[in-house]
Length: 178
Image (cartoon, rainbow, N blue to C red; front, side, top):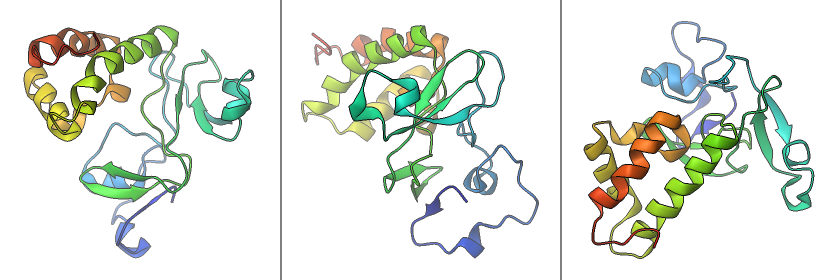
């Protein structure tokens, strides 16, 4: 098990049928989610490998101890939740062992788009006028997706562009990112 739900024993996590080797136990119990363990690269369909920050960011000593899932073929990557982080996944809380992916692997173009999305969206909830969960729920409703699907680090290029375009429409008075 890569991580465990809070307040549940490991015995309750064992599915009656054998889980897919690329899916976490939690996903198989809940009927699936976007998190593959390890993630599969959406660009070349290769299985990613766990790497340290020294591999992904050799010029950033402050990131050397962090984990990343990186594609050995094309170099797309995603970070990991820090060890001990409590993460809401599939309606439950899990504790990361330091290898739980933050999202799906991204190339340089998608990483820049995600940064743009965060620069527009994060001020909306960080200014305190709306809670983060409610802001994501409003975005999800506008985009026609579930709240659980509405996460910047899970979007591909098409979805992230839709998200970026929607922020000023959903939050016109927030002057997000300005």
